[in-house]
Image (cartoon, rainbow, N blue to C red; front, top):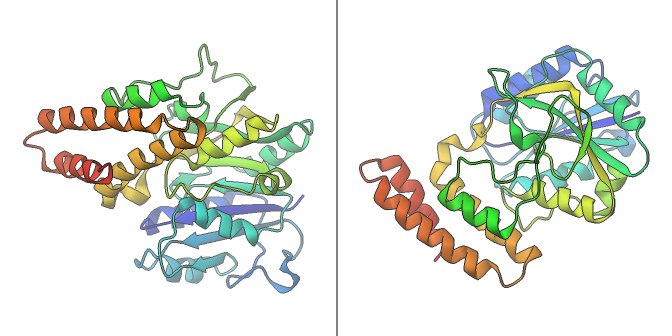
Amino acid sequence: MPLSIVIVTYHCKADVLKCLASLISLSPLPPVIGREGPGEGGKPEGGLSQIIVVDNASGDGTVEAIRAQFPLVCVLALDENIGFARANNLAAKHATGEFLFLLNPDTLIPEQGTLERCVNYLMAQDSDTCGMTCRVESEDGSLQWECARNFPTEFSECAKAFFPYKRWDTIKNFDATKEQAVPCVLGAFILLRRANWELIGGFDERFFLMYEDVDLCRRLYERGWKLMYWPEARIVHTGGQSWKSEKPRTYANTHISSLQYIQKYWPGSERGVKFMFRVALALKKLATRGNPEKQAMILAAQEALR
């Protein structure tokens, strides 16, 4: 069945080139779409797969490098950074596959046949299963626990502000070696039936970056559909590469997106959560005196929450 692979990139030229190399060299599903668009009639030649990369105005030579090294990849070069959610939605409009594969640019597919096996796995599930994820690993082979987690709550969002390194949304007694339905998966790897994606309208574009994957999973869950965690496939996710050069902006946006998520599902509660965020930031500012990088991040978040 046709598979459409969507990658949104911003300021991570080296990573996206590695990602595409791993996709094309190891996957038996070759890219078949023209680089300027979805081709005549909007259908991939040969009916196997397509790769669509949206560049959010990186301005670092990403577009030129992809077109030179991977001429069959469709590149949508934007003149401005429209955000992760909106860029994915734009790419999805060009997708022709029955399955939509959302992949971060800072990922690698380490084993041949991974995507084919994941598509076959999803095809074998009942119609209530709308998508799946796999084992998402760090470079050292350890599991990234966020690849299968619970939905955030008002309490967990406040707790994260004070104790960010604790796994507040962990699934209790989660066994990473077992196939299972999970509430929420990590946006670095989501394989979906495109019909389900279209029925819920894709990502909610109010989320510029962060929480769009959580919100997507929640809306799928509320429709009565299942997302599966399948440990028989794996990818490597280095994590956060696109935004390492803009840490203050990213840190501030994490707080804003959290508040947008709270406002959407618990209207009125965002005021209390916002107050807790402010308190936590004030304490962190005192605790990180002498660390200019962290002070800049905290200041950016405080400005965003005014």
